[in-house]
Length: 74
Image (cartoon, rainbow, N blue to C red; front, side, top):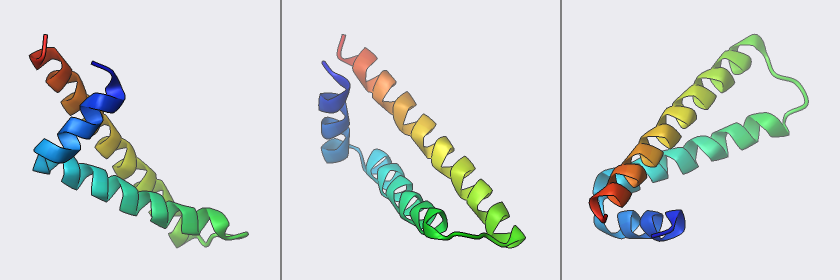
């Protein structure tokens, strides 16, 4: 089964995956707002860095869940 199919199934069947995905999307939107600015204050730079870390953690979590789900189908 391909990644896209696994992701779609998890979105339908797994609340934890859906929550991680939703959080990831929210962080993406926040980061986009920072990237639209021409200048960031030091505080904004720190917040941007933390948002990127959190977004990456969520991405890793979702990838792990997708991998485990894929293995369970074998």
